[in-house]
Image (cartoon, rainbow, N blue to C red; front, side, top):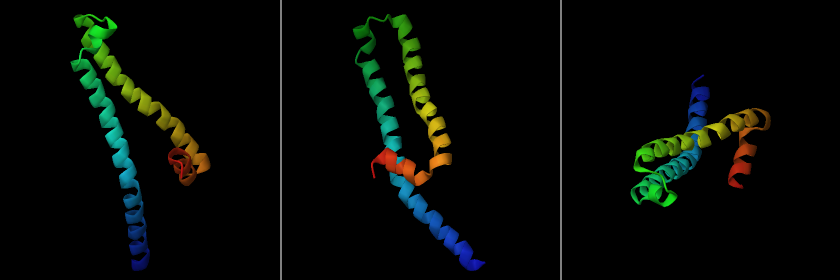
Length: 97
């Protein structure tokens, strides 16, 4: 019983070590998307597209919400596909391994 527990802990530790860099990379990409949007707003993006100052907050809110939608929708299909194909094949397809 003790050896099974230690094997499970070791297996989980290996998985965490493998997933941590991938998750960190995805976090950084998400952060850069949002920061670029903020810099665009500060640089006068709305003036360039001809939007009034009154609509700027609405447009910025919608643009920020679209980031969530763009990340959430593929997650549903990826999760459904993982159940059929398997995690290793999905990661190989996604990251070109």
